[in-house]
Length: 437
Ligand SMILES: Nc1nc2c(c(=O)[nH]1)N[C@H]1C(S)=C(S)[C@@H](COP(=O)(O)O)O[C@H]1N2
Ligand SMILES: [Mo]
Image: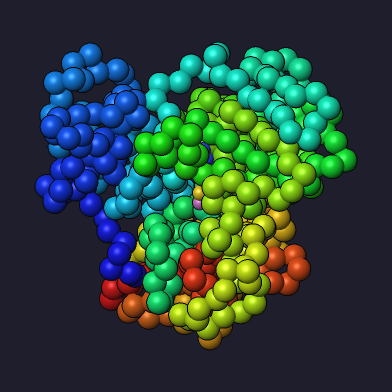
């Protein structure tokens, strides 16, 4: 595990550097002469996290831990979230420990958060508008009520994984959030099909790509600078499982997961799933918004050696995520007593746009493998639950490894295919188990 991956409670974050803690959690900035004065965006973000506005916000000193947050159990708990590990970065990024991802449908409280900028403050879903313009015959401006009324509303369980999930395992390390395994979720998303909106707008033959915009703001505070604006090829937008979603697990989308409206482009890097969505710009060229170019969400077109320099023009945009699995029960580090040396372990497997064919488990460092029982996905693009009964032959230290293979025969590797930005780490998941005797 990289030394850059840090797990800290809010108190520790504030003790180290209160201003940085303010900035990383809330986007609070230090203005000349007015130490710790809450920026509008910081105030909005703090209000969202606290669940209400702060009437006396002008008096709130910089570096003050809101008591509502300081009182919660360590590590720092984001309201409406449960047990997420906040990565020490700016802005808010939090992953879910593997053992908390045990459910087939990821609860809202356990869906990871990956923000590139400051989220919008208090939002009003009934005032929200989505603009669709660009290569269309008829630009549209739709409210969420319009969408519910005029289009088929569908619900799917959809995998959403950050392209950088697993980055912490890269050596040499890659810059960016040091995600371990928990930047993945499989919640139920309800919304309208992206393709239905494009058809209603009269998408033109000239359209090749989409460009997405959200209501979050750039870390620099520049209002006209989107923190991230990615898009997808028209074919992906036309996939019946690509949604413009307004509900999560049958209820409201969590404020940090893009409420009230977001894209879910399942099986592709999470960055394709714009949160706080307010504009879809249909393009006649590959979208060139923030984090579409350079090395962002792009990998070399060929295998590279760890540490190798790669010219930017040799990168391609990441599309489908690769085959992967995780063990969600037991929790790594568990101790079993000799009496219960048989253990049913379980987890999930997914493969971007493909289905998973099989999951195999090893307890002997990969020498032999045991086939797990694999469930069919709830729908295309849902992860698949699996389980396997293991009998431990003797007391001692074991590692359990899980390895999935997709329907095209592509298998999770043991070692990572290194790339400069640390994307697409789909190496096997390993957990530790001790049997005492
Ligand atoms: N508007 C907006 N959309 C965004 C982001 C963002 O910072 N702003 N982050 C993207 C990235 S990189 C990921 S991995 C997913 C994460 O979704 P989640 O925070 O709901 O888990 O949202 C994507 N959509
Ligand atoms: Mo991401």
